[in-house]
Length: 73
Image (cartoon, rainbow, N blue to C red; front, side):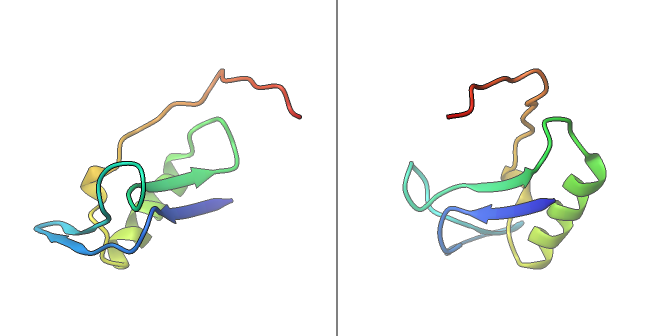
């Protein structure tokens, strides 16, 4: 599965598209997958969708979650 999350309404227009605010509230842009392993195909699909929606995808940073563990509650 693929999830696209915006931390608020994108209101700041830039040369590469719109962005949300800055700081902790009303900011952020994420592509979320249901797996720890990266799936470049889904990530590319997410980037393309966000760009089509008018988001500035140049702000996205890669995060590697492989090997992360947690204790379910």
